[in-house]
Every structure is written in structure tokens, then in C-alpha cells.
Length: 195
Ligand code: IMP
Ligand code: MG
Image 1 (cartoon, rainbow, N blue to C red):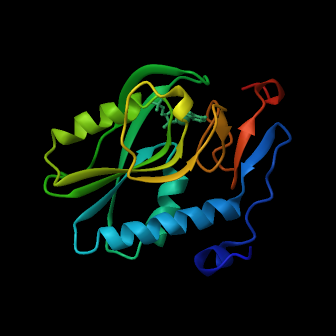
Image 2: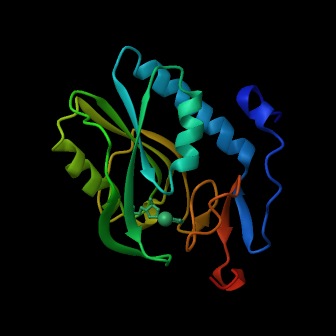
């Protein structure tokens, strides 16, 4: 399917495609789904005080594309969290590495997450944010891995549901690598270079 709008002017997307990563969702499919989510968000947040809360680091690519496809005067904030070491298993411990720069009381917060895996990060974030008195809190997640769910979490805008595989690219990393892949892929850890 040909790319249109902003994506056409950004093309050609990088050809970076390391052999140890098998493509799961192409850049074109990602772009299409992101624009569908953005259209829905644009409709549902019209006239509201929308703050996109980009959860660093993994959401930076998704949030950048989503923000540019939303036709509303949004604010963008960043929250740094760390729930994984340099491993492919959740530590279950969530650490805030960078806090908001402005208050969000009275705002409509849309948490922008790369992936909901065990759900531990998101349930912790919701609790933290509720204490800051926003008007509402909703969640946009690019990916959901229901197989590993440990906390029931509500996802209001979901890109794709995936199997229990470790994915990289489009912002997601393995040991801080592969975030710049323009597509989403499955990593074969035995083929990954030494870090
Ligand atoms: P949760 O707390 O287990 O839901 O994990 C959420 C965070 O773990 C995400 O924001 C990611 O940073 C990371 N994560 C979970 N699964 C993957 C994956 O398959 N690839 C890369 N990062 C992942
Ligand atoms: Mg990560």
C-alpha cells in the first residue's frame, strides 16, 4: 500500500534491517494503524485539554508519530520509567527516572506506552498519576502481549495484540539497541551481537 501524507515525505524509511531480527509488523502497517488510532483520538478528545504522556524510552517513536497525526492542540510531556534491566524478563520493579516538567491537574492525560506486557508498569503509573488530580487518564498502547498479563489493565487505544515473543524496533529495545528500526521485529537473542 502506498504511503501518503507526512509518511510519504519522510520516505524512504531506513533500510536498516539486521539479520538477527525477523520482521513482524512493517513500517507501512505501523503507519496505517497509528493514523487510525490518531483519528479516533482526534474525534474523542475534541474540545478537551489533552496531554500526551510519552513513557520513555520505548514510546518515543510511537508518541512522535501519534502526536503528528492527531489534529488537536495537544501538549506533550515525558515520563521516564524503567521496568526492565538489560534483559528480556520484567523485573517487576518500576523506577521513575525522569519526572513531568509541569503539573497535570485538570488535564486529560493520555498515557502513550510502547507495549503492555505484564501490566505492572501501567498499573503503577496509573496510581502515581491519579494522585496528581488530572481530569481523566486513558491509555494508548502500540502493543499488547496478553499471554504474560499479571495485572488487569484497561487499554483504551490499542495498536496490535501480539504473541509472547520479544520484539524490538520502532522505539523498543533489547539492551538499548534496535530502537531505531523503522519496523517491529522479533529478535533471535542467539544471533544478537555482544553488548
Ligand atoms: P510491563 O510492566 O511488564 O507491562 O512492561 C512494560 C515495559 O517492558 C515496556 O514499556 C517495555 O519497555 C518493556 N517490554 C516488555 N516487553 C517487551 C518486548 O517484547 N520488547 C521490548 N521491550 C519490552
Ligand atoms: Mg525497554
